[in-house]
Image (cartoon, rainbow over the protein chains, first blue to last red):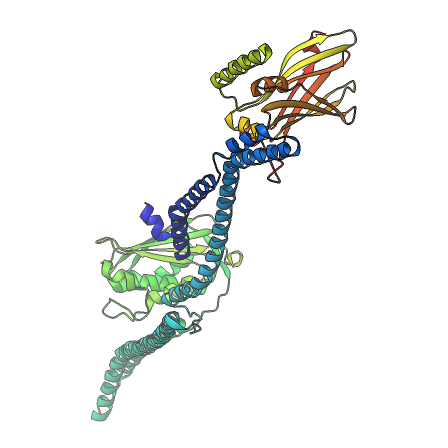
Length: 388
Length: 178
């Protein structure tokens, strides 16, 4: 306990405590020794037989000589009786003076130590800020060992800034590479069937067989579908790359969710419990619901149950699917853009959802207990106008 | 001759009495008697404080002990005096003087000489004051003053040694059975 307290003490207080300890351990006995020696010396300086001698002379003296002898005796007695009192007084004075001087020394020492340790404390604070990734104002202003430490911290900060910049550039490069890879993959997917369809049309036209109206309709429908996919892909990228505009309106959450669920067709059965109307952006909410339901469908779920609950100033929408769920090791990275664990995923679905939810001043969380699918909880303020 | 021997025995007896008595480091003014006269009341009291060897040594060295004694009542009976105990070092004799400051300025009374300090001390501690019978209260206060050390050109506060400086007591009419 004592050692822990000692370790927590600032350097200057440690020095002062040591000084106080030394004062009590040495100065106190020393002053007692000095006073005792002084007292002994003073007492030894008084002739113990003086009064006897004076009284012997007084017995034979007369007139003025008698008066003078009486005064000598009185002086002798007063000196002897007051000696211990004077010594005590001096001792008290010495102690008071010592304590006063020591206190003065302590204050002076505290001031000097505070001044001496201030650059070190500034450095410690600067290092702490640098460690947190902030920029600290550090410069070499001292000489000697302290100056060397200051220079080392300056160098350290410069190196860290350079390393961070390098890491940032590398990160950007990696991100661009990822984007290019994903885009290439996503664009190539619809392009392949378009190319194949066009080749087939060209082959028929070249061979003179011609293309019947029925086939032409079929080929055009196929190409249209792939072009739609390309457009959807472009829309996804665009919605992620810029801050969406918010247009407020009264939104019936249950009805909106039902509309989105109906658009998913028969492949995904969605049940909805509860209802709530909030002031929010219906288009952005629709995008959120669409992404989440599509995500469940892509993950292999065929059933989603939604529960809408109301709280104080907030609405909660919980979506539970019956898909395979997400392994715990992947949960930490699911919100990152271009990170996907599905075979044909773009890695933008959940990232877009997160961005849109935050735009609507809401919150989103995801849990995936093993074997129980994915449960996503969305929370929105009931009135975005008031919340803002 | 016989008077000196009697003084000697009495002084010796009082020395032992002081030596054996328990130390009392708090002083007081003890009322010994209140005598009622025709128009006045006479108060006899005793200033009690610790006496020790060091006090004796100081007095024996010719350093006087001085008390300022103030008494007053609601009837205007005010008295202020300085009572001093001092020693003639050459003759080994003790004297008590009363310098009355109020109401009679410069009225000094000096006691007879004492050969024993304890006898002188008994007389020194004994204070007598009178006041009007019609007074509803009478207060008496004693303050130990600093003493001058003539040959060392300084003063000494004996209250540091005897452990108290100011004593006071008040007599009110009920205590006197009025």
